[in-house]
Length: 488
Image (cartoon, rainbow, N blue to C red; front, side, top):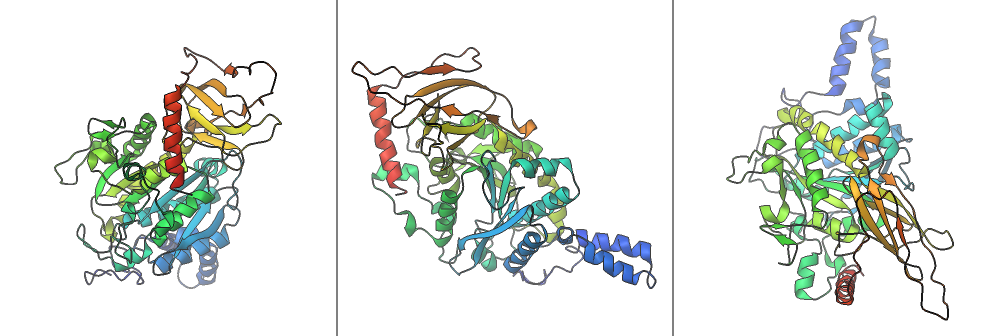
């Protein structure tokens, strides 16, 4: 496989470097016990019965390999797996997503949606293999009745997109840093091609979402199809967990050299969860570059500003908190390093999924007791560019650190509802705090309208929220209209 500088992805790696496989280890163990002749028929039977998930090799898999593997997992595990495609690349290759969970085909109210995406840059390839190993690990854990896997799959619906840029992967070579294949087949960097909130505000013009690259359009459509709560995008070429914003408008979000979201405390926590569970990321190794990263994390803008990034789009438009995970100094590590790199990242990948259970989740019901879509669910002190809205099931999810948080829920024709909740730490129990908001209709009377109700729940050293001034309300409405125009 390594006979030339060009990767031949369709050829299995049969060298000493890449021959480590779980399947071959299992076969070797069986062979040593059965001998050569008498046990041959038994050996064949056992090999047939070895679960498909155990046959995943430590090597670089082609796009066809991934498709075949996902179809195998889907066919052999229909109770926890579901395979679908979100679209095609520029060259027409399917963008396959495998879902794992106890209800894999459809969303279940109260079960958060999580996603991992890899290979956005075609020459940054380790993420592909890490996600394949993650699928293998989750399926084997479930089949082995291991509690950690059972709990994750029972409480979470996990979507895995191992390659967002299959065409770029086909064009890539094996150079550690300077390899080709970063861009898609049209020569476009996909991590600069998403609509950018800050750029739109500066230009004052709506952006035509559907003039984006095919791969970007597919992800945008995907975000509209599912209510993702937490996500990570796996890259290579550094060793750090990066969080939004990647861009800035030079406004209040710019603090020092960083561009901070209203949920910065949550993003820092999420980044540290990954880096501190990683074998070495938390040490802040710079991969030989002059910059170093304290705790192995960084604000994206502080590292280097970029416009049109995917993690900013996820956060602003899809209400999904996403990190960019740089998981290897080398963009295309040698195949012999794959077992060690998987072990470096295994604990981090699992721990990060579990963080989808931070904060609060629930539904918003109108005065007649029906769940409502597009109710605004705001948290005091977290004025997002676009307000967080309930989905078609009336659900909301807010990732929050433990403590008191004041919510303000608004919906046309109903009183504004304000409640303060004490939020515990949910990931250890695989569930965020569950709390539903019950709205009360505004009744028209001859006198003055009644004042909005304020309800306090488990109050601890918290006061009622500040009432926005008219100027602030007009400003936020104008901003919302501009941003909404970007996805209309």
